[in-house]
Amino acid sequence: MLDFKKIISHAKEYGFIFQSSDIYDGLSAVYDYGQNGVLLKNNIKDYWWKSMVQINPDIVGIDSSIFMHPTTWKASGHVDAFNDPLIDNKDSKKRYRADVLIEEYCSKIEKKIKKEIIKAKKRYGEKFNEKEFTATNPRVKSYNDKIKNILKRLAKSLDKNNLMDVKLLIEELQITCPVSGSKNWTDVRQFNLMFGTKIGASSESSMELYLRPETAQGIFLNFLNVQKSSRLKIPFGIAQIGKAFRNEIIARQFIFRMREFEQMEMQFFVKPGSQKKWYEKWKERRLNWHLSLGLNKENYRFHDHEKLAHYADLASDIEFNFPFGFKELEGIHSRTDFDLKSHEKFSGKKIKFFDQKSNENFTPYVIETSIGLDRMFLAIFSHSLNEEKLEDGSSRIVLKLPEILTPVKVAILPLVKKDGLSKLGDKICKDLKWSFNVIYDEKDAIGRRYRRQDAIGTPICVTIDHQTLKDQKVTIRDRDTMAQERVKIKNINEFIRNKLDFRKWLEKFDS
Ligand code: ATP
Image (cartoon, rainbow, N blue to C red):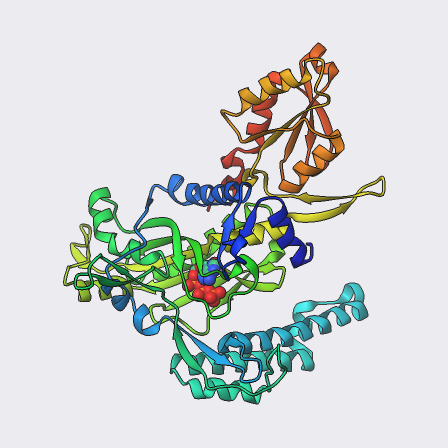
């Protein structure tokens, strides 16, 4: 993986991601997707949507609006509880999330554990057993105990809204401000993350609204509509992709934490009592979805929650090894019947499922899978970008995206413009454009053209040379191996199609 700064500048240079309102010096934690970024993003959406809605007969999709009745957020608990604990450093005047400061402190201890493991690996060689070492080495054990105790105390204090204790913990751990280096902290306060706005023209009739901070509530509010109109029986799911907005206190790390972002969420409605089984199943399914894209398994890990949100009885994150360490990529939550019951209470409408088999009415329990589309983009993008040394001593930057997600699938490159090669290239392009995103490029030497395609991840380059005019064959160059083979013009379409068959990508992971 390349350095994080290089990843960010590559994303800008090649039209993947731009800072929003760039010419006005940008808007903090808001980003735009460029000509290649939007294609990659749409392909991620498509891959998720197909894996949820197309291949599962028991899951349907919706697209609910961003504006929702304000009572939604009272019922969901967001008005009262969608807060982050913030703390300011009096010297640097910088603002932090108190829980993140403490979690980062724990990450530093984790790094020390890793160092001990590397040292021991060197010492013991092949005989080294990491599991046994971690369980018995006194230093590692004491580090692990320390992390466990800190996180437990943090979870308990946040749960009880004991903000004094959160500050005490920061003081006891002697956490300093990364900017000023001082321990001169304010008290910890709660800060609500929802953006407020107004709907309606006149001051008497206008209504205070929130921009939705999650897409899930649009699904809960449509539970009855979808269930009745689709006649689906429990267990079944509703999926949705859409924008969400959060006034994040600290918004660093590029598109990892944005104020306007996109979520891909699925709520799976199950019979009360069966939620644990479904929760485990969805944890497995979602990890398999990630693995199907072919990034190294070691980049993913589960983090089961100590601190549960007010609506959950079980929760786990799929964490990914981002350029700045393991962080949450997706959340899998057992949300109980909290949301549906609460909307029933606030709306006065009966929100139940009638089970004909057992002849009973019940409020379904919910398993949620929730992934940030932008975080998924960052995960895939950062791990696909490599700098490779070539045999001739030169190097190349190559974006080894999973082929199914690449913005452009094929580039058509006539070796020279003259002798009818351009014309033939144009003809091939016009034929392929109905099936794939194609680029036509006839400028510069062929080597430079290959590099341009490598930089945006195009998996296949088709070169047309003089021989093509004679045998109707082109050279197909593979992005990753750079191997070349001759393929008949009439077989190019099938050749590419084979690489992009959705079934091949996902089938073996579909459990
Ligand atoms: P975090 O702890 O990182 O703030 P969260 O636990 O609040 O995340 P959820 O409410 O579970 O996140 O949201 C589900 C998913 O939405 C997350 O796993 C993440 O991928 C994505 N997400 C949440 N907040 C943001 C954000 N500010 N920018 C980009 N993606 C986000």
